[in-house]
Length: 220
Image (cartoon, rainbow, N blue to C red; front, side, top):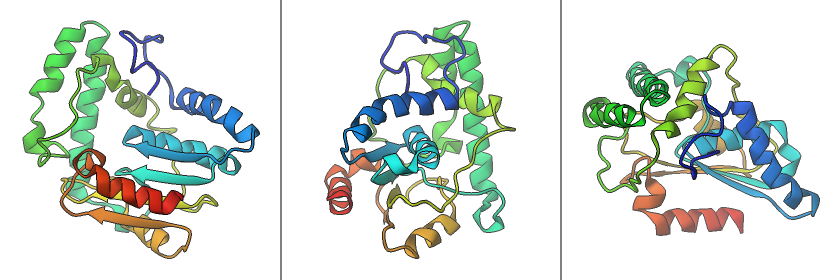
């Protein structure tokens, strides 16, 4: 994500979704224009922004790999899960609030992030061995941008000309995809998915060899 590698945000309220997609395009465009195949791989927010990019510039991407964050639609009742929706709204709104606090005090924001009852009501209560890093408090800005643009939030259709591989962990309180998305993938030969039953959101960290093998099989 833009500025995650920095000690402070270049933009006080973070980057809009449109800005992030544009930044992704600035990296991809030179490779695409040279005729190089472009394989996009995204996890978490990266998955969502890869989807937005492919929706806008499908011809520039050869294959797409999404890790644990797939697609869903609020208009399909089959995809609606009450508990999952409550879990997501709870932690996402909290992190959005933490970002606002970080504009005043980074230390207080980090305390607020830490005291949230992640094990009790968080999305991934079963993962204790995860790649925790000392990320800056402002790294929660995508959640703020999410609520800021909730009314005009851009959705991503299942249909795409780009072949897709979706890998996700089962051990979570909520999946980040709709059941109808899995149906779509299973009905198209150029697409596939795999559920990792013993892993959660950080499947590429807990089962790196298996995830790598699936990606290599799909990409090459």
